[in-house]
Length: 240
Ligand SMILES: Nc1ncnc2c1ncn2[C@@H]1O[C@H](COP(=O)(O)OP(=O)(O)OP(=O)(O)O)[C@@H](O)[C@H]1O
Ligand SMILES: [Mg+2]
Image (cartoon, rainbow, N blue to C red; front, side):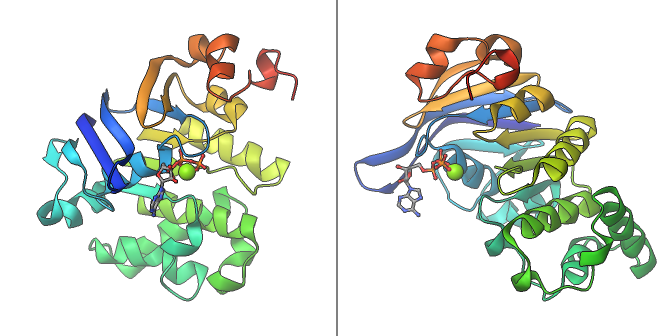
């Protein structure tokens, strides 16, 4: 579903953010993307979405990500950015949620049914008519997740989905992410969440993949995690 071949990118000359990153994610697979601050997680997500155009090749569902294919790529890939402020462009939560589905040709009735269902699953009915820019940090994050659920894309990229969420909402979101049928790539420092939602983990450091394997193996590897400024998940004996 998602393929990266030799993907490299630098925002500024001589300061590479991604260095020859190669991996593939199969249909329906859930993959955690972990690594220290500045490792390149968000940049990799942006490269998958065509928000930055890297060297090398990115393909989504067989489609090469480039300027020409962006509308089609964005339709297949739903995303929650690290800063969800930047991704809401309609005034209210509900209008924002309807925008994608209506744009993809659903009737108003179908789009509303999807949006209502997503709001219900996330317990957000009360936010429906609220203005996006007047929401709290966690409310914005929840609204962005609801918007993705309503869009029902083929694959989902989430950058720090649980940051800013209270424990109740964090658990709700973990359960929803775990049960989604879609292909998922989830970047986070919340390694307990990654362990609960992903079968596989990719660890990056300074723009390079340093490990790619089963979540249960990588997230148990104390030495590997600590060498990369990470800690064992609490549920695997981490100190917290
Ligand atoms: N807009 C930008 N302009 C210049 N450099 C950038 C920009 N965004 C990120 N970088 C740099 O690129 C590198 C990778 O950043 P990125 O945001 O991908 O890291 P990250 O793994 O997502 O980190 P975090 O865990 O803090 O979210 C860092 O060195 C960062 O300083
Ligand atoms: Mg980031």
